[in-house]
Length: 135
Image 1 (cartoon, helix red, strand yellow):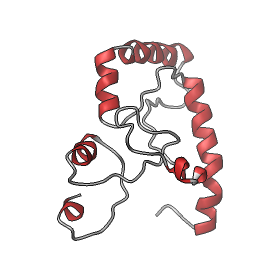
Image 2 (cartoon, rainbow, N blue to C red; image 1 turned 180 degrees about the vertical axis):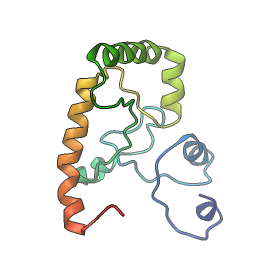
Image 3 (tube, helix red, strand yellow; image 1 turned 135 degrees about the vertical axis):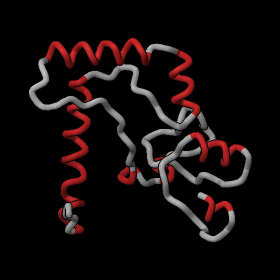
Image 4 (cartoon, helix red, strand yellow; image 1 turned 90 degrees about the vertical axis):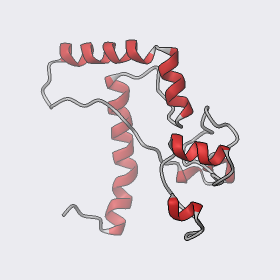
C-alpha cells in the first residue's frame, strides 16, 4: 500500500479493509472495484467487478469458525448459536461493514459447508490448470 501511495507502483490487487477504505475516502488511493458479487455496503461508491462485465472474476475472502472433524453436532450447534447471538449486535455489524466485510447474518454450519464445497469445485480446475502444488 505504501508503494501505491508513493507512486512506486501503478496498481495493487489486495483485500479490502478499513485502511484501504479510509485511503479511498480521503482520495489517497482510488479503489477501482471489488471482486465481490455486489458493491460493499459500507462503501457503495465502489463498484463490483460483475458490474464491469466480469461476473466470473468474483472472488472473496471467507472467514469462518472451524472445529476438528468429528466434533459432536451439539458442540457445533452451540458454537453456531453463540456466533449468531454475537453477530446480532448492530454495532459489531457496523464495524464489519465499515471495514469492507459483509457479515452473513444468516450463517450456519450447513451454509458454510455448501459454500466451501462450491468454492472447492470452482477453484479445483484452476489449480489443476496452472499446476499449483503444495510444497
